[in-house]
Length: 291
Ligand code: PXL
Image (cartoon, rainbow, N blue to C red):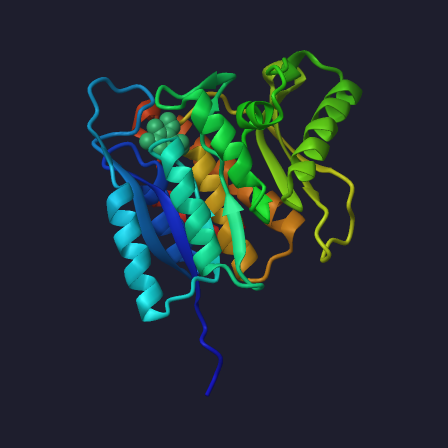
């Protein structure tokens, strides 16, 4: 009998019913990449929290416990555990417990420590979430903070990278990558590093896993198209997870994810898409086969 051909990822993120963030992005991206998503909705919101007033917010933690118990009874074993936006600090305890119950030596654990952007915490993020998220990141194989989240995890001020010389920028980001790998994860990516007086944007990565061919930090530098669309972090991380689970090496997967996010933002900007609607993902999904 041929080996089972599909990898499964348990994806713990919110379901925001408008705005194309989190599960609304993660499900189609991973499906197109040929990976089965086992969604574990952490929170149900009417919209994401970036740019909307009066959104509904339902914490689904009690349901998550019941789903995990049922999966355990069924013997379901995901190939990867991938977490993102959480309802609050208490939900970190659920994730911690889920990792203990479901992880094997082969499981890839990817934590996107969703807490803020552009130097600011999101409205729902608290100091308690930051410290619990820092502890949770110790259990990950890979973490994918944006620059804001990397600074929160390292307890350092948010730097003005756009104003830095290339040498100063490399030193600043390398120091962050070193501190983040010292937390525990062997592979780290920092997204959304604005460079060159805001004309460029970089993604930085480091691979200190046993499989690494080169432990030095690497950078993917692209022109900055401008504008911040909510959900691009979810887009980046899901392409990364999908590519890693289908055999792409880590640096190539980081490059592919950066290029796809750039392409989708460029497409969305060309149509003057309101930022809070999220990126125009649907017409771009087919491009995932080309990156
Ligand atoms: O993509 C980050 C994110 C995820 N989930 C919710 C959000 C945000 C960012 O604003 O509001 C609900």
